[in-house]
Image 1 (tube, rainbow, N blue to C red):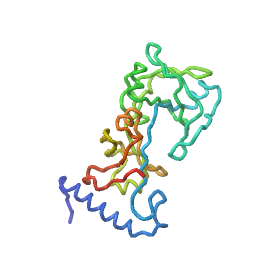
Image 2: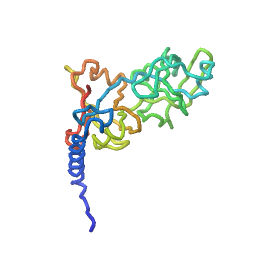
Image 3: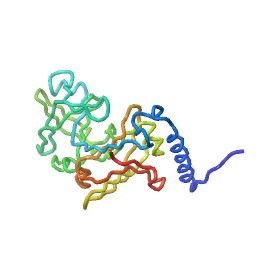
Image 4: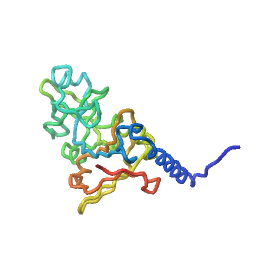
Length: 244
């Protein structure tokens, strides 16, 4: 005998499943739980970070721009294995508009990518689309200038769409899968803002972290936020975590 679930009942089924999983999680001993969660409650630690303009380079472009093979690490980023490099480049747009010292982030990638906020793009005279990282087909290019050379990109400039990194356990908590969309609610004095369509990116070893660009963060006055919540709209905002 087969069981068929009507489309309109799907959200109710999801909510029931999440309640069962949460109840089971709360019965576990602290040493049975993932280190990314607090010991006494099934609540992921949420971090919201401001992603300022930056560049990802290929090995070849590192060599061209700086004259050596490896980037020099300045500091680690929140996600393990990622870092801000000591190196910066000048980005040159149409009509010689430029941003003089844009940070390189490591490690290197298979394709060079420039990530800008909307106001950065206006300053350069470029109109990049909002894209998921790595989706560069049909995007505009620019010129990168380093101390040892110049790289002319035919494509690779994007406005990175807002997104959240999480591991599989955190995805179970929220009831989401890779490429789903979530809601980020920021409460701040006079600037409370709700961001929809936050792209979900799930991977092993990732930490729960939302990335907003500088324009988005400034619009919501993130620096002075009183409360930040990540929400799953499909369970009536019941499945959520707040920033610590």
